[in-house]
Length: 551
Image (spheres, rainbow, N blue to C red):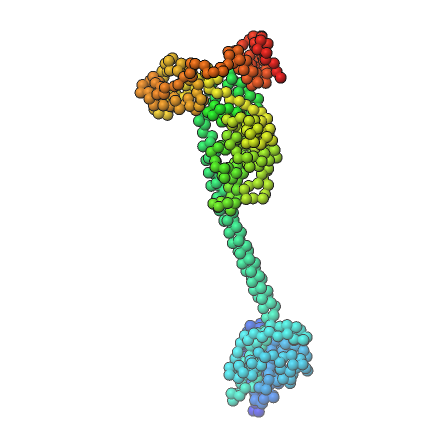
């Protein structure tokens, strides 16, 4: 400086180099670029330069002349204000960013810039309230929409520059445009929020799906347990009482029955097994099922006589939950369980008349509804029915539906009573004695001729079931290897009752019965002649003599 306080050019170069080291390559070289991050810190040293120059106006003009190129090289918008907040100078970045001109800006109150577009509440708070109490304040975020350039997000950094006397000389306002960064940040936050919301919804859906899956799994477990119970029941049913479906005997009448079983087994035709109690009607049903195409599925059995009338409908057709008191869950009936299998309706003659119509519909159409339900269920079930009653007589009495009788009586098989199978008794006795003795841990290998004669001389009104009971008591009564009967079997009376039939009548009736069983097949395999043990010519001669002919 000279004596009046003027600064030489050399001195300004020296000061510039000391304040902004490395920013000048030479006194007259171009300045290097200054980043927004260090711009305000570099400008902070300008107050030292200002204090070295005397005269307010002269000092400001000299400073802006010297540092003009530096300010314009800074990418961050910069504005210098006087203590009254009027714009003294702004750098090129400010004019370009906010699309204003120097002549429209310098000397104007900052809040009046751009037709008062800069009259921003937060900017006023910064310059009028915050900065007077603080020399420096950084990173005040302001969001504002300008008419000319639209929305901007700015970080404001302000600093007061003082004279030597400590009086405020300038206010430096550095503006960092963070619109793009904040938009990206907000977009990311919005994306995160949306994705979080989607994840919450997905989580809720997953929870619902999980609950639904757990509910379905619980239902499956219930059905699985029920199926296991049903399977256990069916497996128990499959444990045959009579040597696992083996029908013991070699008599002609039994061979005829087995021939009929072989004829019908492979079809799906409904079969009606007739015979007295204890003759083995269930064995015939099992033999038919074992020879059928449905043998891979278990035979499902229902004893119509063993169930109360108020439960048999539920047992046959099932019921819905709440169908009646105590119906706590859905129950599958035997017809549903027997779908694609065989259903054995034992003692069909005991079925209540009001259920016979529903059974008729299943036999005819394969359709029914569960008790308490409205949905029609279709099934594919083969039906084998059995009874010890004369259903034709029951139809006449009104105890059995005639249409159901015709539907069931498509292929009847008559099981002969044991009294008509006397030749089979030795084989049956040997079989049951061995079976019972093995179960009891005994060894009985001798059955005397007298015991066998006594057994063959009895009429067996209870048929094979009675025979088995008698033999079980005999095994219990026998302490050694020889069988001793415990029962005194009553023989039929030796006297003839009044009105007794002659031998000729008995013979005629017996031949007629055998001919009807064989569908009047006189000769050949499984014919009436074979069953009666006669030559076909002899049988034909007896038929002529006894006036037997097919009606």
